[in-house]
Length: 341
Image 1 (cartoon, helix red, strand yellow):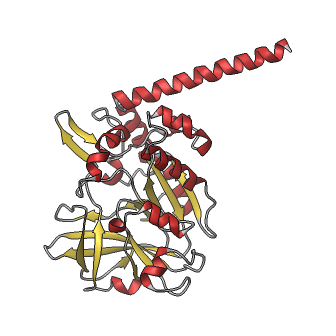
Image 2 (cartoon, rainbow, N blue to C red; image 1 turned 120 degrees about the horizontal axis):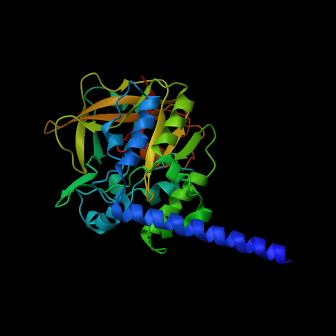
Image 3 (cartoon, rainbow, N blue to C red; image 1 turned 60 degrees about the horizontal axis):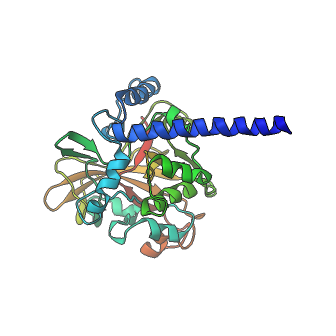
């Protein structure tokens, strides 16, 4: 009996030491800022896998920097301001356009920021559509220099020390000083639950908690290292968060590849992406031109097989069509589309 008690006492002691060490590390990371070592580690892995492919700016913006405070803590600081500032980047992000139920769509997306669903025929040159673009820099400039207000990537070795499970929610909230009953805690919990849900039929899904793990997933799914990530980008003018009318430019939407893996950024204390591969999905590059001449190279995904989607999905109501009848398309703005070179 004494041996058993001693064993459990030692186990408790080791658990306590691990807990305090981990908490101390992440509090230090949060208050002092990520070091350049983290960015170097992540960049080195990118260069190892993609030696001939430069890292896109959209990914570079999510690397940790010694010049910034943790993006998540900054996001909390700016959250209330951004909720009341239409030009700001809201901390609460939407995702899950292929969610398991249509209620998830209504929960995660503000009506004014809902992704626009359309038909493939709408990609013809000259077609007009109302689109809400959410293109804004994650970096703000203050008295102490540039600060990233979005959560940044952590090196894989660090994220592996944090069990990415709903059962570990309390620990995660304490690590990042999140109030247990706050909206931030609720959104963090929702991300964990969404990542633990079973994949849809035909879907291959994975929640990447680091850039390195995202790279491994997309390489495995696309079967090659000759791939690159594309994202919707402004060509000639800064875009704010607002709805406006665009027309499809000359040449219309052009398919980039018969295969694509899409990674959606989700709400979490550090950068996490929900990546998935759906058969029958094709990415298009679509030139969009606004009345004032603003040009956006938008990434659209067209899903050619919607027969397995929930009949209550918002796209069917929006377009007035039924599952499995026509391809359904939508733009992705802050998300990454990985395609073969």
